[in-house]
Structures are given as structure tokens and as C-alpha cells.
Length: 144
Image (cartoon, rainbow, N blue to C red):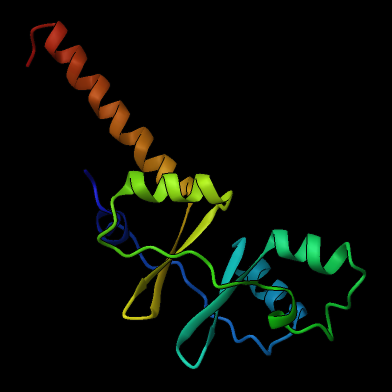
């Protein structure tokens, strides 16, 4: 079964580390700048949470909190589930589905090296299915 490492090696890392004491306004500005939906929150080199668009809506906007004075640590999702590059793709998808999350920090030796989204995993899955379909068509048509 395909490992996450194969996805990671085929692209540049997509990770913008964020400090838990920075403000939500700073996080939102960075998310908008890089067109990303989540930032990993790292303290002293260790992943302590993630801050996502969902956190912004539910824990900041709906609660009427100030973007300028609220610290990310106050509204982040703490202790997120992670994966290693050696985890298989299907396992990561099931993990995300079971938890209802759309982003998975990839961690090696307690350091965040990348972030994968459900979309990343689904695109790889669709590509694998397309290759399988093409192989089956070739087999049926006697082109194998």
C-alpha cells in the first residue's frame, strides 16, 4: 500500500508554523496570504495544536472574540492527531474520516515537516484509480 512519504516527496512542503502566543489576526493574515486553511501551532519545536478556518468561525467569530487580542493558544484545536511519512495513505484517510478533520500534520521526531489535507489524499486516490482503469481497459482490449 502507498505510503504518505510518496506524496510528500512529489511536492514541496506545505507548512507554515505558528506560535501559540501570536494573535488570531496574525494567523488569519498568514492563512490568507498563503491561501491555506490551517496552520500548525508549535511551541519550543513541539506541535501543540492547529488553528483552522473552522476554529476561527466556531471559537472566535461565533463567540464574539477579538481577532486582534485573542491568542491562538486560546482558540486552537489542541493535541491534534498526526501521521508519520511511513503511514499508509488509506490509514491516514480513515483516521481523518473517523475524526472528522480535513488536515493532518506530518511529524518526524516531534517536528512538523508538512501538512496533508484530505484533498491531497483524494487527488492521489483518484490518480491511482485512473491508472487502474487504464490498465483494465488495456487488458480488455488486449493491449497489455
